[in-house]
Image (cartoon, rainbow, N blue to C red):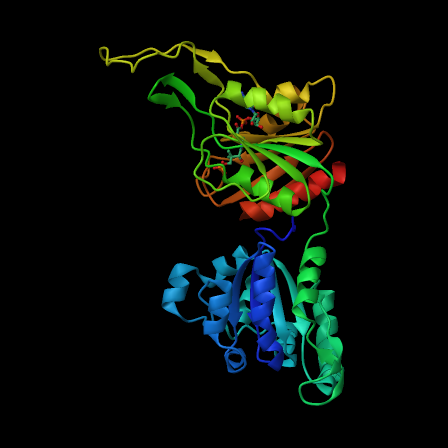
Amino acid sequence: MSHLVNKKIVLGISGGIAAYKCAELVRRLKDHGCEVKVVMTESAKHFITPLTMQAVSGEIVSDSLLDPSAEAAMGHIEFAKWADLILVAPATSNIIAKMAAGIADDLLTTLLLATPAKVAIAPAMNQQMYAHAATQANLTTLKARNIAIWGPGKGEQACGDVGAGRMLEPHELVSLCTTDVEPLLLAGKTITITAGPTREALDPVRFISNHSSGKMGYALAQEAISLGAKVNLISGPVTLKAPSGVNLVNIESAEQLLQQALTHATQSDAFIGCAAVADYRAANIAEQKMKKQGDELTLTLVKNPDVIAAVANLSEKRPYTVGFAAETQNVAQYAKGKLVNKNLDMICANDVSNSDVGFNSDNNALTLYWHNQERELALNSKAALALDVMKELAKRL
Ligand code: PMT
């Protein structure tokens, strides 16, 4: 399976003759399972129509920064954060110069300044323009900012000149997306991830649960897959679609989670407990729907097994074990306590007192703790944080 599966790519098309190759490029990226959104500059539309790009991408093509309906659907900052990669192809000398100068005078150049994602450009222009000192200086500036420069190729050009300046072919660009976007840091590794809430039944129609949406755990699964890992995703009841390629195992209660966790953990290199597991369950589950009885109801709850502690204390085939700590106060102190008491290798703490992060939000902020080290991951999308967590994990496997 391509590790581009589910990767979110913004293809920025600027105005060069090579733009005609972009339909093929989008088709090939989609064949690899990418989600592709196309942004065109005004001049690009002279070389290939937005309708063609809409037909091949299956998405409305964006071309304006000042279009209220497009902004209402997905604002340009949200758009910039959506991407895992922005690829500008073809990249003309003009857009290269604007990028080097930090100019943001249309949608594409604005996205390029606003994105935290990896950016790559595929230069395409006349060989004389490519060789010009101004273009070369601009490319040096972009390289210093970690922007990947893919190509150009050499050969006969549309204008009749021969030399360097041809945009790389679509298959070459797809292959660079595959190998250059993220090295397969977790290739050959198996990772088991728990996600979502547990449900502890009270009777056939009622349960105790919590607000976990599964977004954080599913983002971890997605990023692990894209870094080449084999992933078991043990999930409580959520409404999310599992990332393609994961082995999805559905559970409801903490006891079911424990059973699945122990089955998969011993065959995994790492185990990540992101599920919000109920600490208690009903001592007795009523066989029939409970009837209303007076003004008060007392439930007797008993302690659930601690799933992650059971994994972390395996005496054989113990995986590298990562917990999450959802805290509303004394975040560092409680998280570090769980790291030690549950015998974990690493814990990711989130402050869930803030409703903009943690449970159910698309964003989060984490502090990662090891026994002798810590790292802050500032507020970001759960996808971006998940990638950082996976990269930290990869260093330790
Ligand atoms: O799902 P989202 O809406 O995206 O929200 C993400 C999240 C807030 C749920 C997630 O980031 C998170 O913090 N998950 C852990 C929630 C939790 O149960 O934290 P805790 O501090 O109560 O538990 C500490 C660790 O022990 C966790 O790894 C938990 O999975 C594990 N645990 C807890 C109790 C139990 N009986 N068994 C466990 O394995």
